[in-house]
Length: 627
Image (cartoon, rainbow, N blue to C red; front, side, top):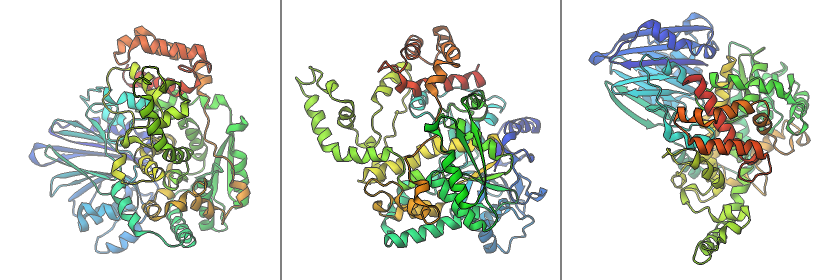
């Protein structure tokens, strides 16, 4: 796990300036660094830089940027290729000098060209320059585990794992992309391909970007809609056959992710996904206990630590837990913009950073259970989506009646119960599974005038899927998972220079999930059916079968308590008018009403804490980088 940055430009910056960009990512790679600048064709210059977190081959033979044996290729690479040993055996003719996976990428490209990417199983963000063809490639893994940004400025391109190196590039204008702010406040993150800056984009999951002498091309080598349609046709065997095959795949994925020349552990929340990954890791490890980590909360309704401890005791892991109070979480607030260098408002980032900090005292690699909910139907929203699909015909009829004269003039629709209005107003075929949110949308629309990027993702028809649960899962895999969950985990783990590995997000698991009949994932209200049944092979059902509990952060209490003065200062009309982004009068009134009414006001109460927190996080980011 590392950080990369670089450029290809007609303007050559100094090596010291490139090093300055690179060093903004010290936390991503504290063990080594390297910077190189060299001439390219057509009067261009190429710069490549790398900060290294040593995982495989801890010697200097793994130093980057790394050149191919014939000096044709130069690479700066962030991530892990888990099947690199198998690939290395196919590449016997290459004179390997190291035992790391980076060199395997170079050898694979020389043999198969850029299509070698399709052979890689792993998480990665790759920058590779081919001197022979004068092409710079930027490549991101299939599901977006590793981040990669690029800035286009005329015929020049600058790229990095995070925004900080791009901001440090001489002459970068830091022009805010106002069109995405409304969606950010609604979704709590800036989704691919956009970034918070104009002309700065994220390489999308499963995408290759090719740049040569001012020309940029990009394409998907792994597209969720296409892969889903193809794999769905393959099908799977009986439920028991599918369970055993998936179990074997998952075990192998865990085994490969335990390959490292540094200590390996696992996050253990006590939920199904992390418990299953931990159980498989302990099975692979044999008699040697796996190190597991969890954090607990003194507030009982949020606390899963006792369940995690019970699972750890059953599996025989070497378990470490840390009980934290509200003040420990609150102390993390000020560090958010330094490590999430783009506005990001999923408050579970705070406990995620805390558990990463706990694990970093002992290990450099941790396994996590991310991906189980999105690929195997685990979120509670999927229950709501199933109900909405059943009620959709009635909802369309209700909407038609209520919006026709004279019923519309009488305001009949507004008199309906909230849940009925949500179903009835769900009219857009492209966003059918993205329920509700109209109250948020109305508020956010008034907060900003600009913003042509839609709040929701109008892309559902491309999945060609009638089952709304499957559609929503595919949508979450393409949007929420990379834009929110994986971004959160990447920045939280990198804050402490540890590498988070997600076995459930192996390409083999993802593609196998597409082969499964929906009933294998969701049946009679049971979510993640097949994953749960695999987990029960290792862990008694009684230790796992309980309502899902997420990390809890008391946003209302903080915003109305210790953060109140800061929030009030952020929303002052003078401050907002100087900033020139938000409608100063409306936002000032909305925030002050929110602070005043507590959970009693339907328009400004606790249900709007996410909007207030998104606004706070944006202003916190703005103060860090723009003020």
